[in-house]
Image 1 (cartoon, one colour):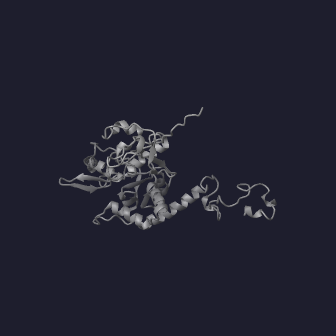
Image 2 (spheres, helix red, strand yellow):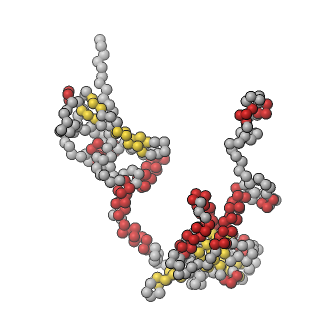
Image 3 (cartoon, helix red, strand yellow):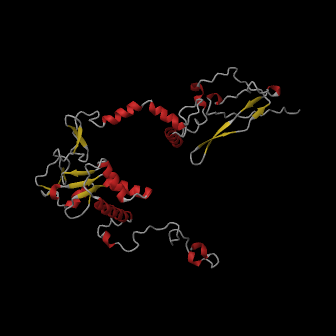
Length: 361
């Protein structure tokens, strides 16, 4: 008895980003086209492909003509997206953790549309139009930080001495500094603890360069005997990098030096350009120019890079040896691609025959 041959019906992976009606549903021929014989239907298949780099590619396959009738909806109305949303082709891969994070990022960045309806807008335009609906909330949030925000009283200035503040002079908010209001940065003690014998920086004209501004601050060193550290060590303990080791008058914050180091590696930013950007953040009108500390910052960045080199070479962990005793080539990075005996070379490599010895060199 001859076995009855089954008709193979192609599996439908329909997704049309321009019309939600194409999600998993076969489409009829238009009225202007002649219907195929035998009740055949035309099915358009669009496949979603995830590339190795994480990009999403939409590919339309050729038209399939089946000899088996397929039930199709009689109404031409667009299906309810709420009922077809669970049939989106990426639901299967968006559930796993790494891909789900990547999917969310691509929606936020505009690479994947926020809506799967019939629209000719780009995904970036959709994200922008969605933001426009909340522009007042964004604007009010920015304006609130020009004043007190949601806090009625500021009590943390003692612990955040580099805050930039304004005061109401009866007409407008005028810039001022915590130094002008009497705040002093006391080194050698915990925040809020007074030193019985503070010594102000030379000429009481100390400058700290931070990532948001060049600050003129009131700074006192400890001379009461609670700490035996010199002035530059007291600065380092508070994450202020001194410009000089003898009677310092300038310093840079550790976070500024860390940010600049990465920016210089990634964008080839010069110290001059970085300093000018910070100076612009301090005063972009040119009416109240900050004290020029470019030469000091240039020296501090050179010293910072050298210290990082010594630290990564392990020269700061010896209790008996000084980093100044580093020998020539001691801070060099071992090349992992070069042959090194007892590391990435086989035993008895020196006994290799002459005709194959070249593989070890």
